[in-house]
Length: 74
Image 1 (cartoon, rainbow, N blue to C red):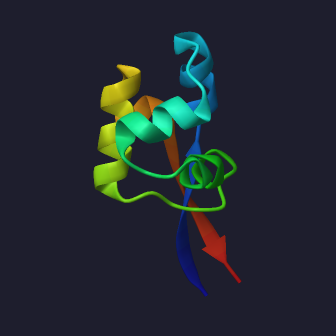
Image 2 (image 1 turned 180 degrees about the vertical axis):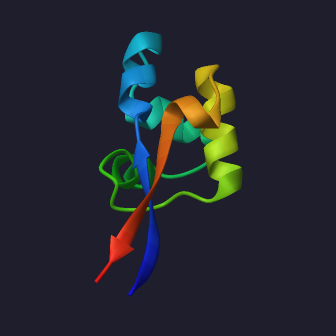
């Protein structure tokens, strides 16, 4: 038994407000569109650097883009 961290991304909300496609965001951040898709679908946890870069491009903070939760493991 232990605890695991869960990161939930809210990038799509901020992308929509900026009217930015996944491809445009990926290009500005320097990652592939597939990476952005996987982060948005919570299939992939981004590095801290990628989180920072995404937040800068979208004009917001890491804390607004990502929810960090702790989950008990059985």
